[in-house]
Image 1 (cartoon, helix red, strand yellow):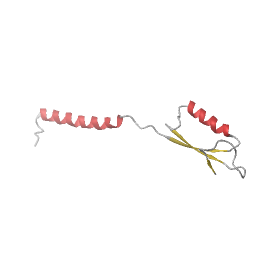
Image 2 (cartoon, one colour; image 1 turned 30 degrees about the horizontal axis):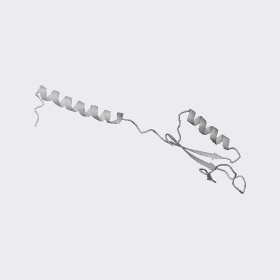
Image 3 (cartoon, one colour; image 1 turned 30 degrees about the vertical axis):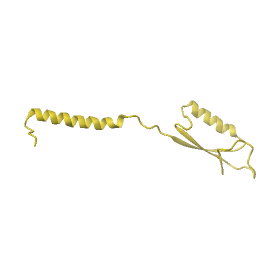
Image 4 (cartoon, one colour; image 1 turned 90 degrees about the horizontal axis):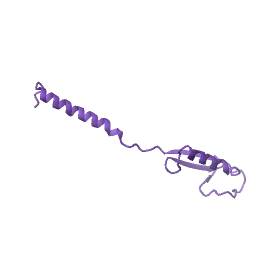
Length: 93
């Protein structure tokens, strides 16, 4: 099929082999999907500012809610009835 003794054929095969290797290596160099972290927050209804402060600091550090971080918020039931804080997105345990 190919005469490998011919120097021109060797050069062509070497270039083809090199191009295949380079293309395989460059396939992984595209934009990588950013990792989304999932953080669970276990809070007490009497200290809602702690959760808010944590989220504010995480935002200052570059973690944007919904883009690269997701919060799972849980409240601990400390009394028989739920507190009057805004807990529409929080789960009670």
